[in-house]
Length: 137
Image 1 (tube, one colour):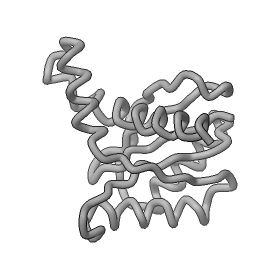
Image 2 (cartoon, one colour):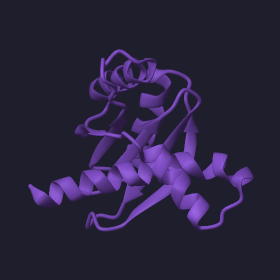
Image 3 (tube, one colour):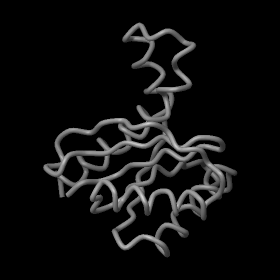
């Protein structure tokens, strides 16, 4: 099944997709974040175009569970579960942006390009975490 992963930020949403065999995850271009409803509509369109069987959303987890990011992602997940006809799963995204930045630095990517790449790479890491969890179950 092909999964689409999202790393929801306040301005951009990182997007990644896997192949039908759930082996290879690839980052796509980020989407703008203009609210939960608009993002859900954009993801619904992508789900049809790319023949997506499920969506996984990275959820930021803080000690108190009351952060703005958590509220934003909760609204997105709720909106997607209403709009989409495919399963919507969640994964703890803790540290994915930092890991993505580390990977970009390690690969020698100039900092000026990070803005264009970091969100998609974080979504790819979220998707890889989800796929690894599915394989263990």
